[in-house]
Length: 94
Image 1: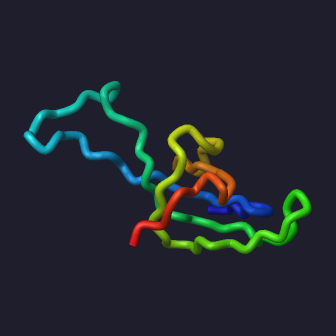
Image 2: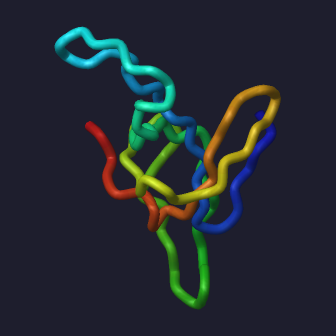
Image 3: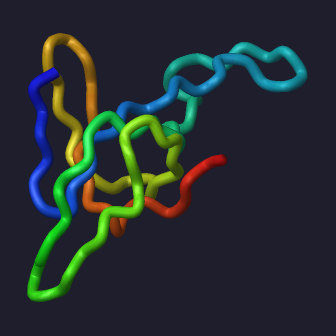
């Protein structure tokens, strides 16, 4: 992958949601929720963004929870990624 985010942006790849419920019911594609958990693929350098010093708090390989409808989805080499600002990341899953 040749994506290098700028400023306080982060490139993530969504983790696929389960296709069956706990009770064993198979969900069709339209009924599935958009996944909110993703793996961090690339992290921007941070620095001064909009006049404020930004320290990047996530690193490559972290699993994160992000705002449901945030970021821009892009397709590179057949893979789908989302590019969003660090502010759109709600938590790191440990």
